[in-house]
Image (cartoon, rainbow, N blue to C red; front, side):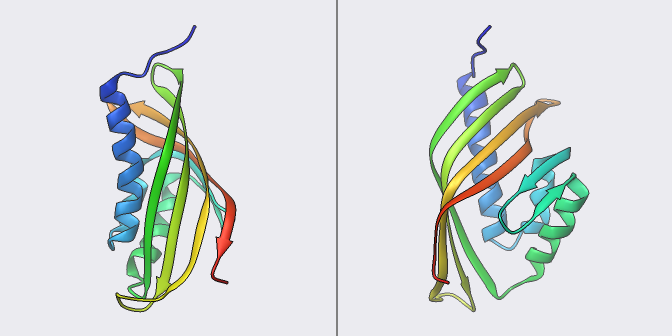
Length: 140
C-alpha cells in the first residue's frame, strides 16, 4: 500500500534538511544532534557515528572550530514514503570548505548524494539515518 506525503510533511522534511547545513555552517553545529533520533546513524567517508550521543560529541567539536568555514547546499530532492511516519529522502549535496576567516579561498568542494531516512516522532521529523556518498571531490 503506497503512502502519501502531505504538503505539510514535505515542507517539514525540507526544513530539516536545510537546518542541518545551516547549523553546521553558522557556528551552531553543537545543536545538530537534536535533529537526529536517539538511535540514529550518520555515515560519511570520513566517519560513521551511531547514536545521538556520538553525533552530539562529534558536532560539538566542530562548533568550537572557528577556523573552519563551510557551506552546505542541497538540491533535486526525491522523497519516497516508506510508512506514514517514515520517509526516504534522496538529494544531491554540495559542500564547500575553507580554513581561515571570511572571505577565505576554498580548500575544496565535495559533491555527492545524501541518502536519508527521516522519521516523525511526537509530531517532529528527525533523521534516523543519514549517509553521504561522494561522487566528486576537489581541492585536495
